[in-house]
Length: 326
Image (cartoon, rainbow, N blue to C red; front, side):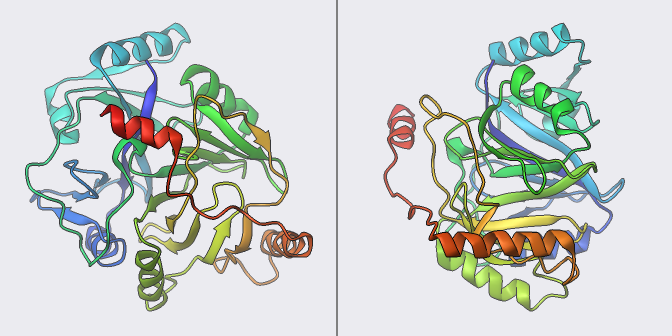
C-alpha cells in the first residue's frame, strides 16, 4: 500500500492567464490545451503534473499521491477507513480528468484534500518545455515536493507518518518546527512547517541543470516581486535554489542538486544548522522581521563554524537500483 511519489498538485486560482505565463515562461512547463476553465501543465512524459482549477480561494486544491497497483490503492483506502478517515472512491469522470486509472480522495486533519491514484497516463507526444531548459528531475522521484503550513505539528504528524506511512528524513525544532518526509529517494516529497497557519507554503520543482535555475533566477528578477527568497543552498537536502512568488501569493522553489537518500537505510535525525547554509534571504518579509533576522543569524553561524554540505553526487546506489529495475 506504500505511497511511492507525489504525482501531481492542484491549485485553486482565478488567475489563469497569470499562471499560464508563470508556469511556461518562468518555470518552463508545457501548457496542455484543454479549452476549459482550468490550466494543465506537463513536466515530463506524464499527461499532467500541475493543475490550476480556475476556481476557489488562491491556495492548494489537492495533492495527488501515487501508488503502484490497484491492490495498493485498495489497501491504502482500507487503512484510512480503519483509522476513521472518510474515503471517497471516484468514478470515471474525475479519474479521466486526472488522467489516471483509479482514484480516491480524503482529507488530512487540517482539512487539506489529498488524492491517491494508480495507473497514470503517459503522453504519446514528447514533452516540450515552455522555455529552453534541460528538463525536470521526475521519474520515480515524482514531480517534486510540497510543503504545508500546519496549525499544530504534533496533531498532524501522526497522520502523515503513522497512517500514510511517510518516512521522516530529518526535522528541526527552532525557530519553528519543520518536519521533512520521504516516500522514495528524493530527500523529501512532503514537509510541514509549524507556523500556526493552514495552506500551502510552497511546492518545489527540480531542474536537471544548475544553469536552468540561474537563468530562471534572472527571469524572476525581472518580474514584480518575482524573488521571494534569494538564491541559496539548503543545509538538509543540499539543494541550490531560489523561491519565486506565484500568482496566488505562495511560493515555488526552483532548484538543482538535492541529495538522494536510500529509504532502506536512512535514519531520521534532528538538524540544528537552520534551513539554509547560505543565501535564501527572505525578501518577502520586512527587513526588521524577527524570522528574517533569525534566519540570517543562523546562516552567519554556519559560516563561522565552517559548516559545509556535500557536493551533489552523480551516482547513488538507491537510484541505480531503481533505474536498473525498471
